[in-house]
Amino acid sequence: MTVSVAGGDIVLGLKGSSEGKMYPANDGQDVFGRDAGSTEIASSFGSSLLGLQLAGSDNTVLRFNSIGSVSSAAANDTITITQSGNTFQATVSGSPSSSVTLASSFGSSISTSTVTGSTSALVFSSLPSSISANVLSGETITLSDGGVTATATISNISGSTINLSSAFSMSGGSSISVNGGITTTITGAGIPINSAFISAGSAFTPSGGATTTIDRAVTRAAWKNIFTDNVTLNGEGRIDLDSDDDTSIRSSADDDIVYEVGGTDRFKMTTSQMLPVADNSYDLGSASLRYRNIFTGDLNLQNDRGDWTLIEENDFISFRNNKTGRRFRMIMEDITGLGNYGPGNDGEM
Image (cartoon, rainbow, N blue to C red; front, side, top):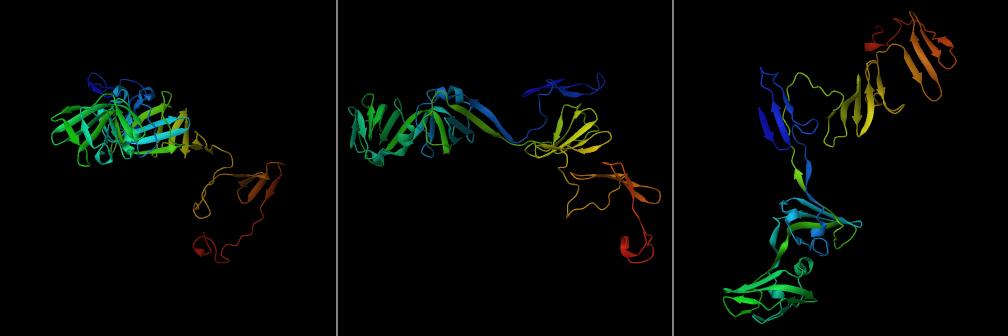
């Protein structure tokens, strides 16, 4: 039986005809569960961007000459554009469209008092930032009031004047008296965005060589418990223990276990040794957190000055200087029963 899933097949062996195994169709490629992170939705779309300056919060639409390369973008995706050390970031707030609202509700800023079928330019008392930040030539501008609609294509913007490719096309009437209450929109191809900002460098106008990505957050989806008799990694895997995958247990060689903490290998266990990976770098216990007892055979002590081995004989303790080979015996006095000392301060072991 084969079950098709995103990213590959999971093949189920039938008990009786095989051993009842479940395994991925592609070795080392498919994942059981999902970690939190992000996945790339689109990239390398710099050549599709229109040449509007990216400055920050005034940018409410990311402009494109064609939205085909970014059509899969959706709300809450993150857009990043980098060029020459400058980086612009924003959050997608709506679906890509060839007719996104670039600016609206700007009727009160228009100085032209009446729009008719012969009007070929609109003069503004002050050009709204939504227009200067988002609008280019070729966009559609629409004014409407009381059932009368005026539509035209923008030729260019010069100072505080929008020049039209041709006069307004009127429907429902022959004129519109311009005031703050009329409906005004400018539309064009793009992606609605919010929370735009320059995260590095300064404002810039992107070109085809800009580095561009759209990323989508991926939520964590983990199994609550896994019940199994054995986990076999065959020396090719690792068990990650924290969220940023820099603390792990792995076996990269036969009969060898490595413990990684904070992105650095710290300890290694072999068939006969528990070793620090770096010499003279780690402590066993601390001044405030001590081990109660240390059970050991001979005790070897070595630093940058001395090299000694403490050896337990039958009825005395000796030390060997490993640099000279000379042996020394500790002179000891039997004080059993002579005072308050030892475990429990009762004078006896």
